[in-house]
Length: 176
Ligand code: SF4
Image 1 (spheres, rainbow, N blue to C red):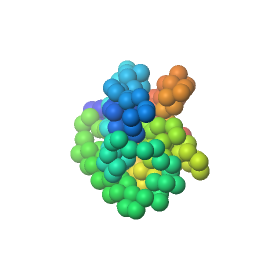
Image 2 (image 1 turned 90 degrees about the vertical axis):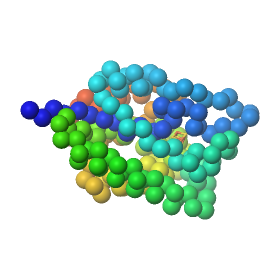
Image 3 (image 1 turned 45 degrees about the vertical axis):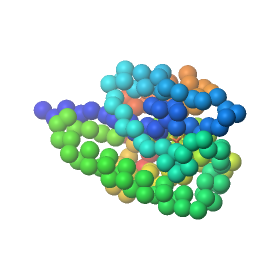
Image 4 (image 1 turned 180 degrees about the vertical axis):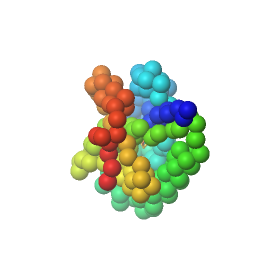
């Protein structure tokens, strides 16, 4: 009998806070968003950690930039596209090779207000962050559908409740 298991692809910094933008005037983030990780683990769902597109392009310390400013950075959109292609191919391979237990991509988890990893709320123009636009385009091209969530560090309680949707079926999942 084939067993099914779920995974959720999460923005890198959910598991590694020190990749968030930082400079001497800002408090350094460390560790992980443990409540989120614990909730996913308690649901018996696995985690696939996405790369952090910002630290891989600008490093740290770096300044805070908006989505428009990242879009205007020479080479950044190409960098995000390349990462998205690599990640989507890896997820596709992981899923196609997992015959038993069969892995399903149940959701993508981003960060509210991130110019790159938000599903809904990139600053200024709103909508999706740049890396997530490219990633979700690539995943949809491969026929995947999944839930989209943003963790809001200013409202973790609501974000944790949202994650309950990962238990649901595919009917409300995102597909372009
Ligand atoms: S780019 Fe994404 S992974 Fe990197 S710090 Fe920002 S939200 Fe986190």
